[in-house]
Image (cartoon, rainbow, N blue to C red; front, side, top):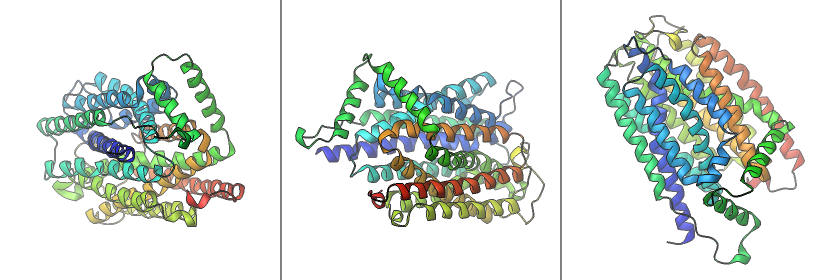
Length: 453
């Protein structure tokens, strides 16, 4: 197998590893609040929303140390050990205790920052300028398939269950733990990419990549602390630039709606007693429809990359309209107290007769709109900060995860219509600020290859 075939295989293995891991973790996040409500124990007093708030809060802060960890032990081992932590968090639900629940939340937040930093590093060293778009699309598509399999399992396993018993919970989380472990061990199949055959053909960016690889293998290089400090300073400098400040509102919006579609909305559907005995299993079906929207949007706007000749603004506007339609239908279809309803659910009705079909349509629209925003934000950040992509994406993850943490925190207390209102306001402002940032890019770089990005 040639060098290009080997790097493509590495990307596919990377995608499958993440698909297995996040089949387990995203399913866990989607159902954990519902599971916790059904867990009868005087020893446990945890909240799934609070746990996710802790995870994303720690994730945000840990972006400052993650590059140093990856530099010391390398991306492959970083992803493996982070994967073990993810598996431990999932396994904790087999028999949860309050102390272990929140301790695991802190640790998995640290692991998340290391995992995604290592993923970006490994994706980069297995790609060239010509293949980075294709490889990113392959990885995105495989990752989003994770929304299918775990949620499909939940749908069939919980079909007709009004109450989630201890046996139901243990069976699900034992299975998810095994799936997550499979993903972690897949990372060992990734091979070190071969260097270019002819040194004269190697570009400066490739030489820098090879240098990065060597520092990942050689432990305790003298300049490691200095490099980490320089990266930290660069991230602080980028965070206050005009371009990043404009994009930060859009990035913050993706954090808010990430919280909503990945944790809150499934809980709302499961709490609707008007959906009958299938309400709990519909959580899994909702996740499948979110995945359909994500994969469709990722394929059209990410992997195929055909829309950039018209600029990024139309895609972001489509994402906003898609989300606003979903929010309005959710407002009409789901009871206002659904996010904070007790285990037996809510008997309140919104403004129309609750419809399963409308609820699942909204799931699809949430996934489609999310992919519109994220593919375009990844594209514009990578383009605007081409020379400083690592610290730029660290700022991206910092803003996104801190707003996700905030949203999971207020989801413990706010009724549904207030949560929707917050997303409408921030989404509208974020879209406007994205338009301005896009116009700044176009006006300042008219003589570049912008249309090819």
